Amino acid sequence: MTTLVDTSVWSLALRRRPSDLNRRERRVVDNLRRLIEDGDAAIIGPIRQELLSGVRDESQFHRLRETFGHFSHIIIEDADYDAAAECFNTCRSAGLAATAIDMLICAVAMRVGTRLFTIDADFDRYAKVIGLGLHKVA
Image (tube, rainbow, N blue to C red):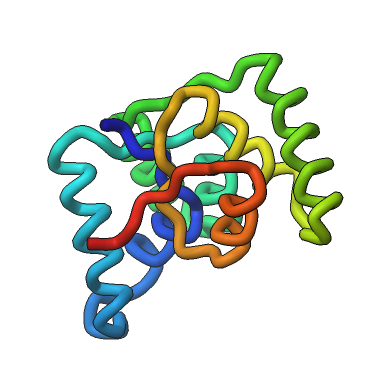
């Protein structure tokens, strides 16, 4: 099953040295590695944009952009924006603050029936309210 991998997981794996990771973070990176090896890691445009933003070295930017080209890209559909707004409103009604991008990530994952792999605790709260499926670290 394809798993949508959030910015927080990619950032941990790409921007931190393995020797600086604690035990839980190593498990997260190992889970990501398994998803990649199995061909089950997916990405969407806004996550790709977040990861490429702020890369100062041009050659590193190009290598990273090329690397992300090898992963499954889930296409955002027009209806996802409406669903994201509904998710936003549902979360707000439950007293949760949310960002438009986070809700778009949730809407896309729910539409395609995939789990979201994240270490951002905000998504744990969203999941309880909107029924988002999350990838649990093994």
